[in-house]
Length: 204
Image 1 (spheres, rainbow, N blue to C red):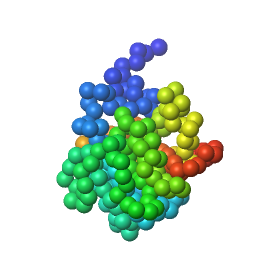
Image 2 (cartoon, helix red, strand yellow):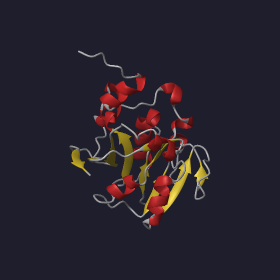
Image 3 (spheres, helix red, strand yellow):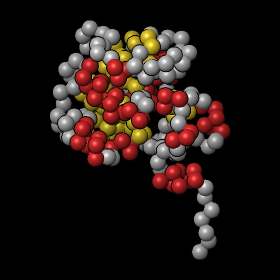
């Protein structure tokens, strides 16, 4: 039997896990999302017209939502040069929402704080409104996530991408494509404030 000669990166791609080791994490955990993720979401969901993109980064998701006619409040913990950035603010310390009345939240949160982002979104959203979080499928794992999040606040829908969606470190999609693309499986996780039923999984 031949010896396997893969490198340190290969094992992560084989397992389908993230190949972002801690030493390579982008500043503030910034990985921009291919806007096609919004197009896929819109085939199965119809968010409210007012949307808070609370980790907008370079505006990749905000721009696609705006192009589709949504009113988007775009914020991030730092200014990454997005021309439509509404405000620089730390979502996790926010005590008020930018809208009076109904709105939804759509974002790709920094994975390190994804659980905290979901919980903060459910705190700030009005009853019946939804949080759409773009997350790795491995977010379903973990004892702490189950006890602190899933057991108390189950998502209403989980939309698994049938084709891989890429996330680019620091928004550099060209470099990612040159390296062969990503190897991580993602899904849209949808929480509806007040929902306490069984999640439904669907492929998009």
